[in-house]
Image (cartoon, rainbow, N blue to C red; front, top):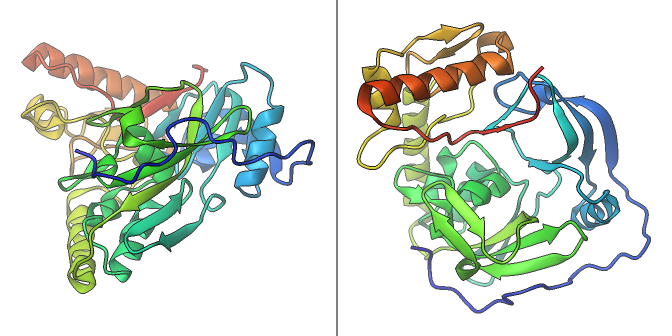
Length: 315
């Protein structure tokens, strides 16, 4: 369960007001998303925006047409963009929303574009423990918040104190954990449907920083040994069903090494789909995902649920 926390504001907090300030970020058209997702394939985004900072992002969102499809992307490590592309606007946050600092004695403030492993190391270097698992999450804070990412026995929302979100009107909100429905690889905002994570405060207990750094090193070595990190992939494709492991079911179904086009199920870890040299299309990967779901359901009666997000249009 999430840690106990201080009482933050529970509802809208219009922290930022910009009037008609001009935007300062970079707007691109027909941006190839294969450059921005870890599978190294997929279509283009109709528009893409690289904000200068959080204030600039608020200005940009305020100017978007109502109903414009909007997608926030960090490291793209849990995302597949179909070959027909995304007919909306993508906002890139990695390397832009990058604030990371200690607040008070035990709270870490991290913006959505900070890589999760960087938060783990930052915590250990400040003698805060319990966030070591973040080193095994290959995405950013924003993505980890959106799906309650976890590994090695830890989950993101177990260490969240409160979060900061931005809505399409450019208004910032601070919300606490009670404002969300939180589950295994699942988070739902109970107060609003159209807000985007831009930062979080993580609260961790004080402890042995050296032991924490040693644990991080051990977890990274374990990850390197067990996962096909040398090939383009998007991490675990499916959630683990209750009481079982998706990788075990996929391997037991005889699917390890199965390929469609240039994509294949990893021989090293059956819950990974790899795309060597980026030769597979997004359609190849999606077809392989569908085949795994059908085969496992037929053989074992288990419906595997995707962890990865699929967006866009078929070619």
